[in-house]
Image (cartoon, rainbow, N blue to C red):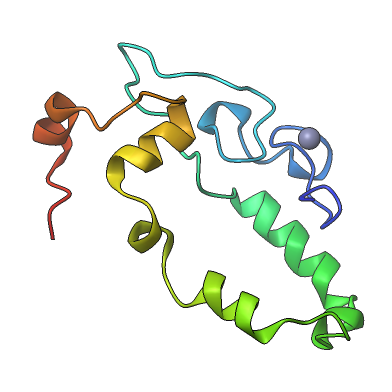
Length: 117
Ligand SMILES: [Zn+2]
């Protein structure tokens, strides 16, 4: 879908100014956590290159301004009324990033800060 919105892989083509090593969503490198890097750096974020590509593409897509006949207001509200952090626990977010049975690392939490609000 991201390619459909005009984004290249980071470090390639129009996104050559963004580094694949920064591991944004469009990085061609898929790297798990390691001892030097306990978290994937930017698993939930698009690089500036991706965002710029989206803007350029969407500027020319007038069809997106119309909800169309299949637009379901109820379903739309279900996915836009809450932030991801309100829908998924921290452990569930870890599972989404690092696979099932993953959970938040207490040692890293102590090092990088609390998740409690
Ligand atoms: Zn791709």
